[in-house]
Amino acid sequence: MFNQTRFWKCIGMVGIVPLLGIVLGCGTDQRIDALPPDAVLVAFGNSLTAGTGAPQGASYPSVLAQLTGYTVHNAGVPGELSREGLQRLPRVLQRYKPDVVLLCHGGNDFLQNRSTAELKKHLRAMIHQIRGAGARVVLLGVPRFDLGLSTHPLYGELAEEFDLPAELDALDAILATPRQKSDMIHPNAAGYARLARAVAELLPNSASAG
Image 1 (cartoon, rainbow, N blue to C red):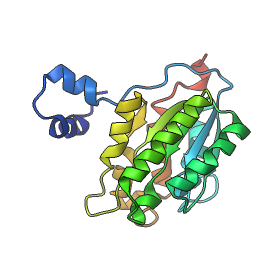
Image 2: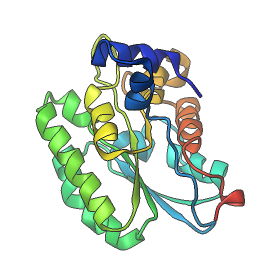
Image 3: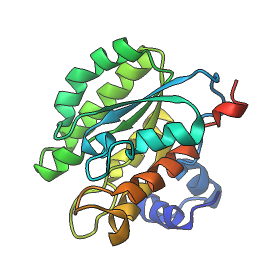
Image 4: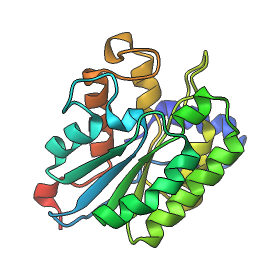
């Protein structure tokens, strides 16, 4: 589906280029077209993945499993920085041997004013690790927690660099909606459900997979 907001963001990023190049070059609406019915997914990240701010069972990986029918393991660790996630990731990949990793990391780096160049380096290394383990990557964009509350451009840049399915809009929209967040930086159950629906749009339903 054509995303008008993303289109105009792309206009601002790339300047005056042919229209077709804008639509294709900045699009991150691609999806994973096929997975086996018994596919294993791992949601990897920090508190946004763990489900902080919502009751048990209401994290976005839990809701995603209900929506799609896939096995979705929640590998979220609250408070984790991207460098720590990079060190932890190999153990998670070895344990679960996933078909797909939903990568949502970086929020604590922003909160602690860590280097965005280092964050991008860590995320790039995570993507290489995941692909090296034979899994596919779906990237989730994380907003900077400032007055604008917009997804940092580095997520779109990585999605373009690695040609990844990516959800770049949901979290900033959720955290800009008071009734869908539990505090300034975490969704509530309604917000996580919205995030799960957005991620589900990038996956085939297990009932028709294979």
